[in-house]
Length: 244
Image (tube, rainbow, N blue to C red):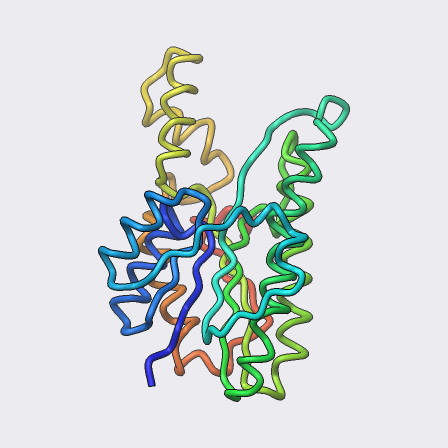
């Protein structure tokens, strides 16, 4: 029987890499994204299907029932500002999208997984789920909350064959990060490689960005039968950032 995976924020970046890898592994992949054209395009490419949804509209998720075997909570955004200047609405948006929506999607998916006696919840957290950085209060708070959600899901799901884990990447080479690098290089008048090493990766022992496909490979393992005893864990993929 073919297993089904739902990947949120699945049309680009990390989500797309995970969707492509899970499709290669033989899963039927639902690409969930608010960008309809991008979701349709990737779904067609990998033989899956698209689900167009704005996951920040959490009220719409309260009565949802998801029939999937693997749920990848990946969708997210970033806002950067000092706490005293941080927009309350931006703070609420990030909590809805990156903490409340994963809770509601997990809630929607567990009954089917429990019925099957097998399931995988994979939460794309961040090094910021384990460490803090200034000016990222909403993102850090949401990712720390996601870590707790993942662990509780692991404890409750254990008796039903359901695992729950976090992947904690540092900076991943995505279009969003590439734009940040170019902007920083222009602002500081330095080469882009210097931005990566001296500004973005100051706390990382390995001075290079992570390829999205590497995150996809770890998600592939966590979604597999071989990972049946791996649950409640947080997998740092950050070049040694959180080792300090």
